[in-house]
Image 1 (cartoon, one colour):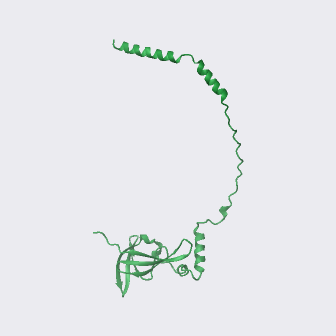
Image 2 (image 1 turned 90 degrees about the vertical axis):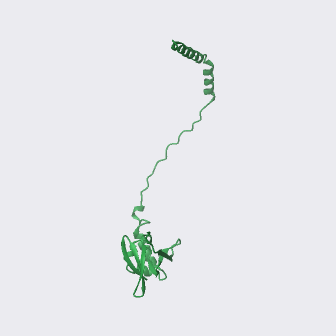
Image 3 (image 1 turned 120 degrees about the horizontal axis):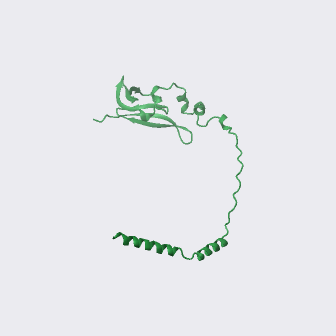
Length: 178
């Protein structure tokens, strides 16, 4: 029995709302019509699309700017100059350790053999014995100093202006952690 009064309240409330909304809408309709007459839309017409004229691609016949062929020619031209640091480096036979970048080379020891210092290098899980004057690294690196704790390498690199300059790099002895 308590449900009937609640439903009664809901029905009375809904009928009151519906009668309030169904009032005279004449005034609203007149206002909308007046606004439509006053506002004139100004839409500019869309321009027709420009005709696309395809151009043939002619650069495929030329040399790619980043090709190894172009780089090789530039290095050889640089090496022909008598004052170039690169001249002596290009004309010699590359050594096996020049295939690896310096950051992949680890110095694991040093020794003296026939009164000359040697360094033990670990590269790609292989052990190499190098001496003064040997080459390693990808920048024409030449070993110029070997001590018990490190090794100095003279590299020939190109600076920002395109000139070849010398740079000294070093590799420190890496001791295994206990």
